[in-house]
Structure formats: C-alpha cells, structure tokens
Amino acid sequence: MRAILLGTLLLAAAPAAAQVSDIRGLTFDASFALLLDGTVLDQHLRLEQELTPLTTLPHTFDVLPDPDAPKDPARIVLRTRLPQGSEDPFQVRFELAGTWDAGTGAIDVAGSAPGVHFWQTPFEDDAFGLMAVPKLVWLEMRDPELVLHAVVAAWPGDTQIPALSISGGAALLPETLAAELEITGSRVYWMPHGAGDDKSQATLGPYTLDEATAAIPELQAQLLEVFGDMNDDLLLTQADLIMLHKMLGPTTAEDYEGDLVADGVVDMLDLQFLQWLLRAIGTELDPIVEPGLIGSAGKTAGKPLVNKP
Image (cartoon, rainbow, N blue to C red; front, side, top):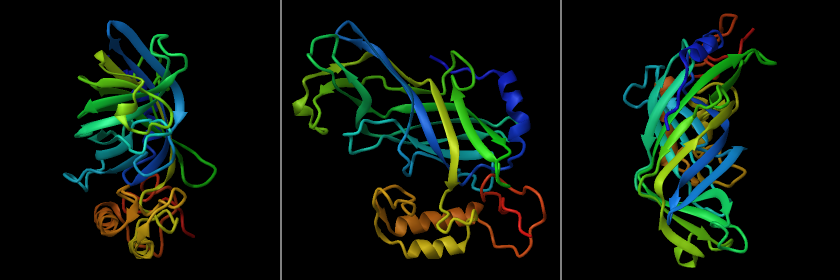
C-alpha cells in the first residue's frame, strides 16, 4: 500500500500553513486509526481500529529540530509511537526524520524503531472462531519502519495563538493513508488478559504473519503545548531550564512534563536535551515585541507568539 497526497490538496492547505514559519518545538495530542492485515496458517487476518486518541505522554507527537540541521525549520524529527493495548508496559517509539514545507504544510518523515519489539496491539480477536472469547493480539517484530505523510494547517483561534492541526490519510482524502508500517517477518500471538508480556501464556501462537501489511489510515493531531516549556509562558528560555533543575527525580503519570526523553525520570539527560533545544530554537526574553503574529505556533523561531503591549 502506498499513501498518496494529491498536489491540489496540499495547495489548498497553503494559505493556512503560510501563517506559521516554524513548527519545531511543538507537541500535539494525537489520534490514530490502525489497520493490520495478513495471513496466518492460510487464514486471512484483518484487524481495524477507528480513529482513537493516544494517551497524552511524551513521545505522543513531538515535532523537534533535526540534529543534523538544527537551524533549518524545514528539517524536522517527529517523535511518535504506535497505539498500544492497556496491558502493554512498553511503547514502540519512532523518531522520524524528514521535512516540513512551510508553503504547503506538508510533513514527510520516515524512520525505524531498532530492535525486537513485543507489541500489544489495540485489538482483541477470537482467532478465526477457534476460541470461545476474544484474546489480546500481540505482535513480535524486528526493526519496524514507519513512513508518515501529513499536512499542518493553522487557523485563527480564540486567542492570538493560532489553532494548529495536523491531518493525514482519510482525514484529508478518502482512500489515502497517513502512514505505512513495515512489519515483514512478524509473528502474532493471542494472549489472555493478565498475562502481561509473558509469551509462554499465549493461548495461540506464535504464528508467522505472512503477507503482512500495517498502516495508519487516518491521523489527527491538535496543538497541545510547547515542548520543554516548564513555566507555561509559551517561550523556550533559560527560565525553563532553571525550573527543570527543580523537577529532578522520578515522574508519575500525572506529572511527566519534565521527562523530555520519556524514560520515567527527570535527570541529566532531560537537562542536556533542553539545553540543546535552547541553543537550536530557544529565545531570549525581549522587552518589546512588535504587534502582530510573530514566529511560529509556539516559541520556535526565536520569537514568542504572544503579543506584548
């Protein structure tokens, strides 16, 4: 399967996208649809999930500078993860490198999640009617690759900050995909509730998933906040670094804002990451800002979006 974004569709988004000069440093709430298709023991397996919100956590949908070109707004790294079941303690995370076009709003990024991942998909299935009740569907995969296409649009909001949205796949045009997930060589397991990731408790499997295809048919994302903004002033400054120093220690599900690298603790890695962001896209506090919408949809181009008197 191959996602297609028509040129006319991208051009239609250009007037809105032109309001924004830089999207790096922003994080979004995101909703994904999911499709898993293949053959197991000559039986067709097709599982589909409608558009469903991801839990708001680090690595949900973060747009960051490309380390190889930290001063180029057109070069981005998109951090995101796959939808997962509620009993999966791990996340399949991707850092997708690519480009963002300020004229059309188009995002084109790709990357892999290195290593072997045991992923609880969001699906429950009765395995072709062989089981009395549906079981959780887990997938074991090596080095999955994700290719994502989307469009950013900015619209006037209730405040001086525009409402930024990202859409892809069916959210833009029927019969298109937001992302393709390469999972060749994957093995599928049917696991009971409460088994965690203990493969020995599989009710069925593992079986090879032949002719495997997976995709995100639709995605929608809405601007949440500025990544690394500890004091909620819509600016990325040294003040945020000072606040982050005071947050050192383990994080909780309710207090994860300072966990920039998403490893469950605020430590030197987070401080170093924020220092790098400050050098790449941070801003100094200016006493006067000219009226009008300046910079990006957050605080990424060296200027804040909030007008000052």
